[in-house]
Image (cartoon, rainbow, N blue to C red; front, side):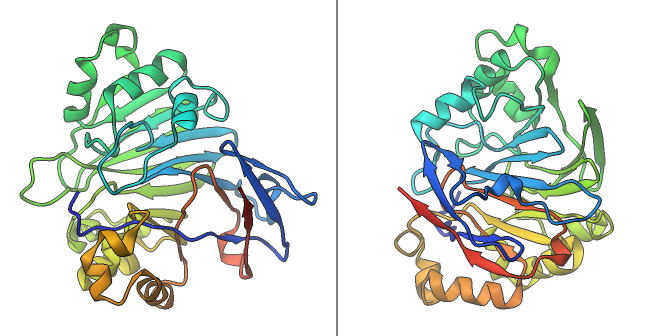
Length: 317
C-alpha cells in the first residue's frame, strides 16, 4: 500500500424517520431506546443487507441468515491502516459470536492488511461450514501453515483471466470472481468479488488500481449491484470516478482503506485541503457514498432507493 492512500471514517446511519442512540461495548451493538440496527427493515421484497465494518477493507456482510467475511482475517496489518482490536480478532479467528455463522470467507489478495494465513486457518478449523476463496498467491501461503490438510477441501484458488468470471456457489451464496488488478505492472494477484445472496448483490474490488475500461469490459453496470466497496483513491481520478459512476453503478458506495489519521498520514489529502474538505467534495459528486470508522459498527441497507433521511448515531464509549 502506498502511503499516498488514506482511510478514515464517518458515521452516518440511514434509517427511515427513526432517531436512535446506540451503545458500542466490546464490539457488540446494543439496543437503546427500543430500536436496534438489526430491526431496521424498510419494506420491499428483497431481504435486508447488513454491513458490519471490521478494519481497513474488512467487512462482515449478512443477508437472509447467510454471512460472508471479506478481507477481514488479518493480524498486524500495515503501518498507518486500521487493524481489528485483539479481543475482536480473537473472536473472529475462533469463530465465536458474532462470527459463528460465517458461510463464505474471501480474501482479495495476500497483503498483510487483508490476509493472514494463520488467521484464516484458525477460523476455518473452528468453522467447518465455511469455504475460503482467494488468489493462488494467498493459497500458497495458507498451504504452508500447519494443519492445512484438515481444511484443504474447503479452500479454493481462483485465477481468472482479465475479463473472465469464475462462479462458485456455497450454502446459498453465489460468488463471481473477477480479475481486477492491483496495478497493471505489479506482481500482485487481486480479485474482485460479486456476491449474491437472496437477490442482494455486493461488489468488493480489494486494492484495485484497474482502469475504468476493465469494469466496462466486465459489464458490471448490468449486474444490479446494491453495494460496492471501493478504495478511497478511486474518487480522486477522472477515469476511476467514471468507473464508479458509469461502469459499476451501485446503489450504495462504501469507501474503504482510509487511514484512521488521514490528514497526518497522507500528504495528498493535506494538499487538497484536508479530509473534511475532500469528503464534502466526494459527497457532492457521489451522494450515495458512505464510510465507516469504528469496528463492528453496522449498517442495514434495505430498499436503498426509498431511503432518504439521514441521521447521526451517537456511540457511547
